[in-house]
Image (cartoon, rainbow, N blue to C red; front, side, top):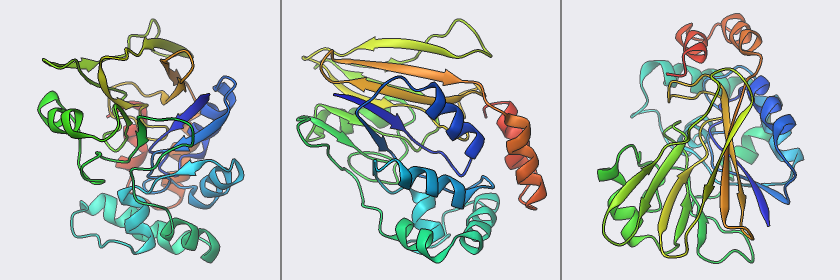
Length: 251
């Protein structure tokens, strides 16, 4: 089975479209959350996600926008974007967002694989470094966990003795590129496909990944997209300008 893994789209329609156009053949889509927040096209992005009939796990911005959680822990910029998004959404899309399931979620016929937003232990937890990853790697019920939330493509491994960082390597900073990563049966994994709509790993290109469960491989991708249009939409919507400028730096 081939699964297209999307995460942290954050209402960036241009980035989402670029990823869908670049994605190789796949059997299904799993979305790791934060469909909305920050970007200027929340309804169009939700409509696209819903039309592909994939499985979606809720993210913290999805919860905040839909009122499932408050904005207490959001910084002012994120909070303003969440409130703006809430006002833009159609009642139907707001209900859809509110009903998204909490992770982990699973795909039929894929044993030992689960999908979360933040961490297998806490859906809002950030897994940024090896210290963060150690306990989830050792205690998760599944050998392989796909996660998002950090907006950093890559992940972590545990071989029974030590943790290591997965860091995709690309040959070009501005072209469509991919990096193939084999999975070993004796290793546990936390794998982040990266952020579609707001990368923060110093690569501006939209990120996604594809899991090939038969071949036991994950292929990471980076895709250039129309950043200028995405930025102009953010500014025209009256959202904080920083949400537009950061798209060109990947930070």
